[in-house]
Image (cartoon, rainbow, N blue to C red; front, side, top):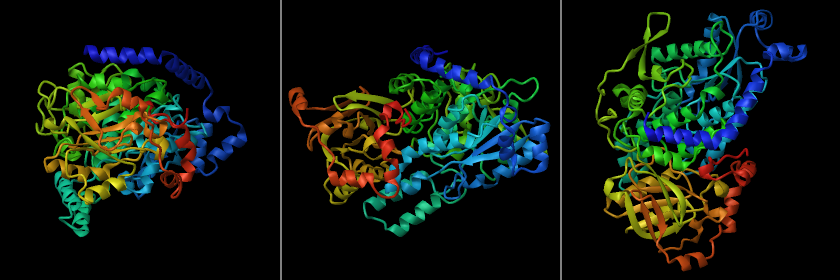
Length: 609
């Protein structure tokens, strides 16, 4: 094991000892109870099974067969979740074949950040994660299930399902993905058209044609954003059946893997003779969380997970922070280049070796814990094999990946990585703490020092760009975008104009207490600045024209202002009219309590504590 991996894991374990101990004690108390249908009153049981066929009632009540719950994020507004429409029937049929019963325990809301990007709905996006977690708890609250299958893929859906499941930590759980859509227009070509549109060189018709060629069918978007990072992390945590992440929705292997997930849920339910239960709260321990962090860093994954996985860990009684990510990033090599960190999409990543190749390389380099429990056994090693469908019965076999990459432009070995470090950096200084992802940023842009231009909305920044006011070296500051202010929306709409400015040769950076999409790319962006401006954070002391230094190599985020002058400055406040806009319309009123109670970005933007 690499010394840094061991050190970070031990530090997390020490820091979390009391919280984790209390969490495990609660699981132990829950596991000491009778099975659900045996401890319930007769009226409760009758209500629980009222709509089931008589044969299922017989299995549950008389035969005491295993009973599985399904929590699904199905809707057909999201391309990634549309394939889930027929999963309950498939899961039910496979469970019946294996002597078990199934109920769809409930659905959780699932919104698409691609639809709401740059629009008011994006201000509900981050908080949808905790809403999904609460929905998951409501789904499972009948408390009659021996194990659960969790159906979700996209940005907030997987973290929300996982947080909710961990609050039922005594329950064995298997995540069931549905796979990416087939490749369309290349992501680099899509980005070029966006930049041309930002410059007014192509019209809306051309932009829509390009976007429609990129997003064109059922499945996850094919760039390596938050949704696909979710799938990589679930593989690294052992919460999928091995190799499930990036198989196309309509591939026969996808159906076989979904059936296999049902068998895996039964195997870990504690209801199969000779097989012990594997509660999700035991699977997700400190080693499991560190494995997820290493997988994120090794693949240049979404910066959103520096918020989400802090919240996930907290749900399992584990405390992590950005310093842990930063320390791991210094030793975990970058093994994958998938857009926006390269030109390949996730289908090319899968063909070149995919998650299995990355996990194997990290394990062999001592940069992941192998001795973990998973839904597939007592080791992470099964996740280094590639699945294939065999025979007519939908069985799954697995074979070892070749030692060499299938495409060295996409994945590489730990001995010859794209970069010796993971590319995520912690920034700190008199502007607070922030994170920056430099894996896609040209090396000569890792340090930017320029006068700042301050905005309080992304619309104002876009207007200034269109007016030609940013045609210079500039640090664009968009503040009052934190979770307290307006729910911390992604500001991905800023990427094309900033990329245009950088392409003209200007030194450009973004500094914000908001988020950037998992698709953020070649422009240096100091994001998630904490404390946020609305909470009196130092970002609110900045004034237009202040010289700001964003330096990834030294980990610096600094306003180059005399210390006495800086200390004497008043803190800017959000104009009442803008605050009113943030609070009203399109459901924002319903999230007022979450905005008031939310913790900082570095604390996972958690709303339930």
